[in-house]
Amino acid sequence: MTQASYELDVRPILRSGGEPFSAIMQAIDGLSTGQALRLLATFEPAPLYTVLGKKGFDHAAREIGGGDWEVLFTPQAQAGSAQPAPDGTATSGWPEPVRQLDNRDLDPPEPMVRTLAAVEELQPGDVLCALLCREPVFLLPELHKRGFEWLGGFEADRTTYKLLIRKGVQREVAE
Image (cartoon, rainbow, N blue to C red; front, side):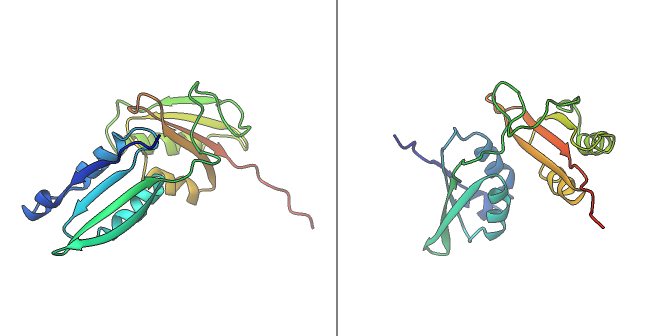
């Protein structure tokens, strides 16, 4: 059974000079598992494609007349999903976390600063678990740049983002 998409019309916000990004992200966060978002806007929201692509959504856009656009954001196939298991155990053969951080009550940028400081103390192969109140969109590219692996996603309550971070194992180079 296919679930009906959630419709969000941001045209009134845009026409009044407002910024609809927070409303869009709130709608995305409120979607049920597998549910799509049908977005109506006064222009093609191309920058949003990358943002929501990183959150696991594909898009299909079409102009609907008068300069208005309809974009359907659908969840990408979940093969090999990069989310922790619902019971909180590490997935994909990762070891149990050696350290836990609860960053849910901290204001930005403190969760990012605290997490980056903690992961630098990890030994190769160690895993850290960080609990956050939102998806860490600025932290994830920084972890990648520093060579860390990560798995993350919202828990069933959709209010806690659980992030597992693993320090890569350094490989010996044969001489």
